[in-house]
Image 1 (cartoon, rainbow, N blue to C red):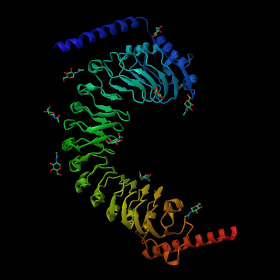
Image 2 (cartoon, helix red, strand yellow; image 1 turned 90 degrees about the vertical axis):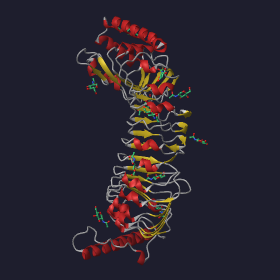
Image 3 (tube, rainbow, N blue to C red; image 1 turned 45 degrees about the horizontal axis):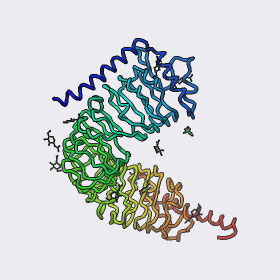
Image 4 (cartoon, rainbow, N blue to C red; image 1 turned 90 degrees about the horizontal axis):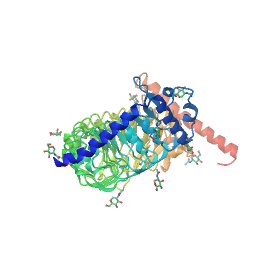
Length: 500
Ligand SMILES: *[C@@H]1O[C@H](CO)[C@@H](O)[C@H](O)[C@H]1NC(C)=O
Ligand SMILES: *[C@@H]1O[C@H](CO)[C@@H](O)[C@H](O)[C@H]1NC(C)=O
Ligand SMILES: *[C@@H]1O[C@H](CO)[C@@H](O)[C@H](O)[C@H]1NC(C)=O
Ligand SMILES: *[C@@H]1O[C@H](CO)[C@@H](O)[C@H](O)[C@H]1NC(C)=O
Ligand SMILES: *[C@@H]1O[C@H](CO)[C@@H](O)[C@H](O)[C@H]1NC(C)=O
Ligand SMILES: *[C@@H]1O[C@H](CO)[C@@H](O)[C@H](O)[C@H]1NC(C)=O
Ligand SMILES: *[C@@H]1O[C@H](CO)[C@@H](O)[C@H](O)[C@H]1NC(C)=O
Ligand SMILES: *[C@@H]1O[C@H](CO)[C@@H](O)[C@H](O)[C@H]1NC(C)=O
Ligand SMILES: *[C@@H]1O[C@H](CO)[C@@H](O)[C@H](O)[C@H]1NC(C)=O
Ligand SMILES: *[C@@H]1O[C@H](CO)[C@@H](O)[C@H](O)[C@H]1NC(C)=O
Ligand SMILES: *[C@H]1O[C@@H](CO)[C@H](O)[C@@H](O)[C@@H]1NC(C)=O
């Protein structure tokens, strides 16, 4: 009880002070106050490379027509100031504290510098304060005022110092989204729904156990820090939809209770040293993004993730053949099984990959895959990017691959592929770099000509309709034509340059 009173006294004092300030301001502030505050800001902008404010914030037009400014219909005062991504540089004037009706201040991606004026604490109607990616500095705790309605706070990618004050919960009772600071009293922010602390270089810190108490948390993104230690218990975070722990140094096991977080849609563990119960992840049937690097084999039950659209399994995975169960993930758009360390996937690419009919991107590079490229890849008619480089694939490139009419990126370098490169459609657009270090390949776009028996094999029954024989003939003709064209152009080059 004594404790509560201790916190309450300064709070009430701050509240009274704010009331006095806003009362005294109310008697004399109007839209002209707002206009002069904005003009003061404009005067302090020293860099406006796109001439946005320079040309637009002019006293000859009403303030509510100024770019980035929104006024409320009732009080006709400035309620929102959105200067994000305008490449402005300069400092903020104290007069911004006179925008007493402001509820949104958004200055993301500019080059503002200096400290935040303490007068901003007068903006007690503020709900949304977003200043990331600027060059502000200064002690954060010194300007934290009383923001009873603040819901969204983002300060990342600046040079702020200091901690969030320990009575943050009293000062920011409505906070739902916090970006950029790791307060010790995290566990008391029970209203918090999203917590973004990514790429802060919060070095060596262990994730506070209290994170497990944030029962309303929907997004927890603490990727790209240097966090170490074990994952705190997260079994009570049943509202979680998005959990990103990637690019940290976390160790230990992924807790089995993860199977209780049934609303989970996005899960990223990449670049950690976690081990885990992938079997329990396979219960999270709402997952659509799964990005792993876990020392564990992919379980067969992965096939139950029917909504999965993005699957990334790279590094740290024990040597393993590609489970054919992956091929039952019929919603997959992006499958990335690339592997950069010594051991990767080995064995043949399952023929059933052809079932992933809506796949847009497939990266199997840097593994030890052997055998042929399955002709069933011809069914991946939506595929835009295919990377099979740095494997031990052998055999011919199936002419069915010309069925991939949206293919924009093809990488087959460093394999043991042989024979003629298929011709026609997208295959006319790839340059010879796509095939580098496959000594047995020949035909366009490589300069190596094919022997007669290496000529492109005609694709059987191309559209699956009409007269099969005619299509065989057409295919054979195409192969022949490719050979002829190549022969002619080679002869032409030899003839015009005078040497082979
Ligand atoms: C942003 O402004 C700086 C100067 O303040 C200028 O050097 C830079 O080219 C500008 N960038 C863009 C994308 O306009
Ligand atoms: C200022 O920008 C706003 C919003 O883009 C535009 O509607 C208005 O016409 C501009 N005014 C001038 C004077 O350029
Ligand atoms: C932050 O401060 C350091 C050193 O004071 C400086 O080198 C760096 O450029 C600053 N970064 C930003 C974004 O202002
Ligand atoms: C956070 O909550 C704990 C109890 O749940 C309490 O003891 C502590 O004082 C609170 N901290 C703050 C800063 O309110
Ligand atoms: C992770 O930890 C290992 C050893 O504990 C260390 O060598 C490595 O630099 C750490 N990596 C990062 C990104 O902190
Ligand atoms: C989850 O919440 C329950 C009830 O509030 C509590 O008993 C349990 O210890 C919590 N579990 C974890 C892992 O925090
Ligand atoms: C997870 O799935 C397994 C089998 O698929 C099932 O036995 C188990 O009860 C499921 N767990 C939860 C929490 O749904
Ligand atoms: C596949 O992954 C490798 C390794 O990270 C990367 O270098 C390559 O660019 C990726 N391929 C494509 C097509 O994005
Ligand atoms: C080419 O793609 C179509 C679907 O677009 C499919 O029906 C056909 O079987 C494919 N042909 C080959 C040879 O893979
Ligand atoms: C690839 O093409 C470039 C020019 O487009 C040519 O100089 C080079 O010799 C070709 N390499 C091979 C292996 O065909
Ligand atoms: C509000 O801002 C202060 C600076 O913080 C100025 O000194 C005041 O003149 C200003 N008030 C009005 C009514 O513009």
